[in-house]
Structures are given as structure tokens and as C-alpha cells.
Length: 308
Image 1 (cartoon, rainbow, N blue to C red):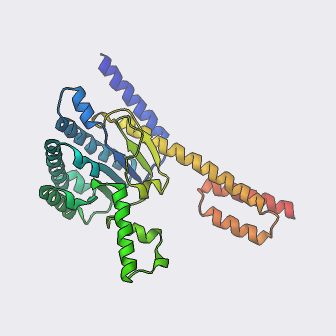
Image 2: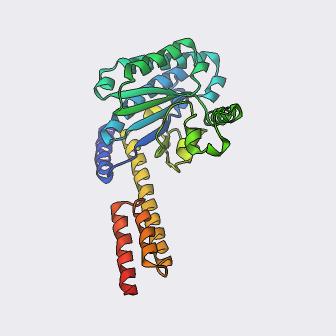
């Protein structure tokens, strides 16, 4: 009886959250933490937790597509994970290999045109995992409706360090002028995989840190972050919708702040010529949503009336 009431309450809350969401992030990145703790608390081994976590991954992929998310990045195996016991590592590699092949052959993946790609130093992985990566990427290479990035042997610092080294080598070889080194040049060298800026990072398992995950694309974009207590195998659609709502609330706050700053700037340049003020407003309008741009125009109109 209790479980039935709980399911009913969860479904009702899910519908409420869904109504609150208007739009959402383009790129969500997830740190799937808590698989081993989940298994230990239930008397199982680490592999049991990872296996149940893989089922959650399949569900999240569907939720992203339902909500219009265009890119999902999963932190499947970090550079730090190489320090785990060999037996656990091998079992995790077996699971990653089987899931990559399963995803690559899944009807749902092809119907939704999901492009699967690996991010990270794949050369450090066992041959069987590298073969599975190559198989999944080849089978889905032509798709562009949705992008699924699987971070394998991935470390954010290692990614940035390698990009910096590659850039320095190009400058030293004379193929790149030091004055032409900019953000776009560095980004082009990040594991040679184009990735959208991350809008939202989600971490399960209770830890409140982003663990060296996509520092260029997430921190550089000041991505919203959602930490939650459930272990990854327990992560529910309600949790996911709460994460999306957190992103939207942060975006709404940012839009309000940007609008306030833009209006303050217009007021500050009001003493300048009308032409200069209009030039400033024109540039600002391009960076604001429509409602904010309209508020800025109203302020300008008020300034026009003052100067007449």
C-alpha cells in the first residue's frame, strides 16, 4: 500500500515539475556517482551496482530526448578509475564494452539518430573496449539529431594539458603564430572532439564537486550544477526534472541580472549623443531575450523623451 502511494505521489510531482519546465538546456553532463555504494548497501558487489546504473543511463537518454536536450555527456570512466582494483576494472571494462555494442545495435538509437562518441584518452583502454568504441562510432557516425558522448579514460586536467602541449608544439614548429593562439585554437585541440558548451552538470551520490569533469566546456560556460543524494541506480525522472528546473531558475536569474545591467548602462550613457546610445542598445539587444530587449527599448524611448 505504501509503495503504491509513493509511486502515485512521484507521478503527480513529476507532472507538476514537467509543467514548470519551459525549454531547457542543450547539453547536459552527468557524473554517475554511487554505483558501488548502492551495491554495498544491498549486499552486492561493485559490478552489480554498475550494471544497475547502466539501466539508469538508458532511461536518462530517453528523458533527454523527451525534453529536447540535444547532447548528453556521461562520465563513464575517469583517469582516476585506473587506480581501482584490477578485478573491478576488468568487470567495468566488460560492462562498458557490452553496453557500447548494445547501444550501437539498438533500434531506438537508430530511430532517434543518436551519434555515439567517446571522449578521453581511449588509447589507454583495453583492446576490447577500443574495438567497441570504434564499432559504436562507426555505426552512428552519420547521425546528428542527438549526440551521446561517453567520457572514457577522461580527465579534465589531462585534456587541457594535452591541448596546451599540442599548441606549444605547433608554435615551436612554426605552423602556428603565437599571436593567433585564442580560445578557438585551444578548443580545437581538446581530444579532437567538438563538444557544445555544457549548460548543466548533474552529480548523483551526495558529493558536491565536479571532479575534473569538462572544465573547459562547463566551467568556462559557467554551467549550472545540480547535486543530489540518490545513488546513480536510484536516479529518477523526478530527480532529472528537478535538475532541469534548477538550470531554468539559474537562467532566469541571469536574464534578470543582465537586463538590469543593460538598463543601468543605457542610463549611464544617456548624457552621450543619441546615436552613440542607440549603438550601445543595438549591441545589447542581441545578447538579451526578447522580453529583456523590449524592456531595454522602453528605457531608450524614455531617454528619447527626456532629451526632446
